[in-house]
Image: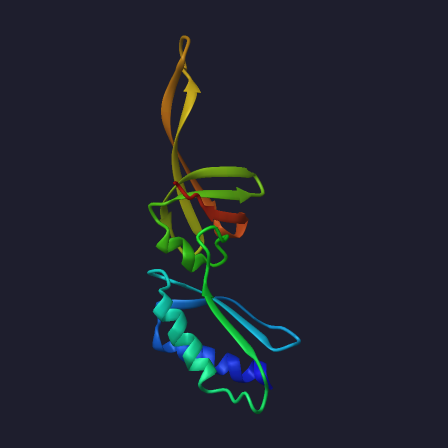
Length: 153
């Protein structure tokens, strides 16, 4: 079966480059193979080519016709795996949880939680006006509905 062959070849290719990991993998009814990768240090075009070749050169088009697309996760793609948070430490994230939305700089990431920090304007405890305060929020990864890197242009 094509899916089993591709899965085995993909696993082998990812073992050769331990910094890469699989985000998404699908095979459509008409044998369009689509693989989306991410990496602890990003994904280069060469990484995609290496994985593509490892799969394509070990499949026989005479046996089964197929098309193959190997791509990296887009910059605006939501974060899907806990492993992705580590590489984004220091970047600004927008995080949606059951309790609300947070936007701040990702300062820590462990296997089960992340920490965001941001500045906020609040009313002064005494008197009129506002002061800038530093906020910090630890969020359990299991509570996150969606997280994205906020891109600055």
